[in-house]
Amino acid sequence: MRIDVITIFPGYLAPLREALLGRAISAGLVDLAVHDLRTWTRDVHQAVDDAPYGGGPGMVMRPQVWGEALDAVLALDERPARIVVPTPAGRPFTQATAQAWSGDERLLFTCGRYEGIDQRVVDDARRRDLTVDEVSIGDYVLVGGEVAVLVMVEAVVRLLPGVLGNPASAEQDSFSDGLLEGPAFTRPEVWRGLAVPDVLRSGNHAKIARWRRDRALERTAERRPDLLAALPEDALDDADRAF
Ligand SMILES: Nc1cc(-c2ccc3ccn(Cc4ccccc4)c3c2)n[nH]1
Image (cartoon, rainbow, N blue to C red; front, top):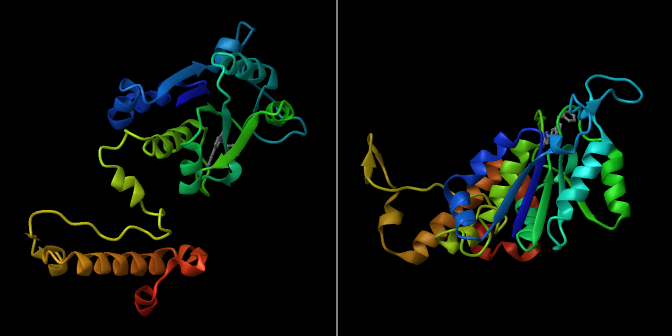
């Protein structure tokens, strides 16, 4: 997978080259290219923003600079790209989104700042039949798109074959079965007077699986009843319903 990121703060994306994602890049599983938006400015001040039409607070990012940057970065590789625009006004980015994007050949992330990017940049891309997804990573407001890109790249890249040492952990993800993850434990057996639940040391894998499922159902019901309500009819078996 090729990933391009356009931003006025390239340094914000440095964490992508650390640890697991860094190893995925070194292993050639991901090609990452970060581009400074100011490369495509033409004025001495390298202006990327201007006052909003219609008035209002803050500034808006200029369409000309973004248009030239997008055209130039798209042209760097012939593979079709999904253009991703992080925004508080976007469709929710979920595990299902990450799963879907993990099959893409190329992702191109555009990091806005200020009050966002002139809408015509998205409109122009879509009318050229480019795939453009405006997405939100949650119902809170950030200062720019870079942190959202870090979140989305991590969620997508960890799903690529060969990235996670243990593929089972991606398959058994929270949300992959629609439920939250239950509690996890490791040594020591007793820590500050708190013992690991006996069932987990029983060696009885059927009982352990049942116990873990019950904890996941309990936690989901308590913290995310919306997820429980959204489960498909056949997602819960009789034992689940008995819980
Ligand atoms: N889930 C999520 C995404 C963002 C996000 C993404 C990109 C940008 C670019 C500028 N801002 C600041 C902004 C504040 C308010 C209104 C509009 C823009 C951004 C915020 N916040 N929260």
